[in-house]
Image (cartoon, rainbow, N blue to C red; front, side, top):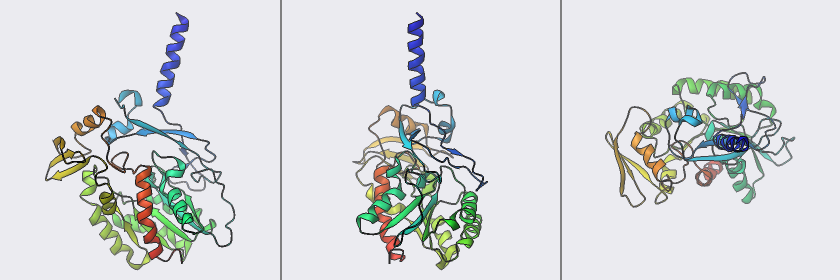
Length: 320
């Protein structure tokens, strides 16, 4: 009887472990604001929802949410809190070193170290003969004020040739621009490019604001930095790759790749309708192309993003 009970406890622990993440972020005395990737992570396990989900679902105890769709990825970091195992060395002659700074999209939520957009962009540029090193300092849920403090306190000693910042304003464009201006001041003439994370088709509220947001940032930054938003191009690349969300007024239509209706529901004030979440749970073959949920590209999505981003970087003169 005790052996059976013991075996049941082990199985329960394994199931529980499969639904939980290791701790990957913590405080950093050099940047008191925000939380940062812990140093020297050795394949820490990150478990994330593998479908669109509400904030309540994302924050709930794993045992309390009927999630059957989760994915796990492994996270490593070096001693300097950069994602990936490569150590930070003095910059070699002829090497361009760029900083990738941002939230979970830059970090690479739900994908392996080498599948994040900074890693894929570096590999793509290397295949084209460009010696570029991209330091991934993205952190899930990072705030712009913490990034500004990082730019002030840590970035000046990294020997940077450019800053790629990927973050959308959360509390207003003017405050965002003030923090960005403050953070970049110690870096002098180091060029900045603002790459706004792409909006998912399953983010109806984000879809209503992304173009206006980009226009406001372009007006605010002027000639100081290019603002790149590849949302529309990524939507075009999704054609025929999975389910889509169409919006007609306050009515949402979830359709398959052939345009056949799967779910029709009213647009709620927050998140998505319950019927859409249930549809993804009931049929695991349903998936938005190039995204793993309504906020983060998957590995293929990051690959497309890099293919679109590289020419913009070249146009800005970063490779000449």
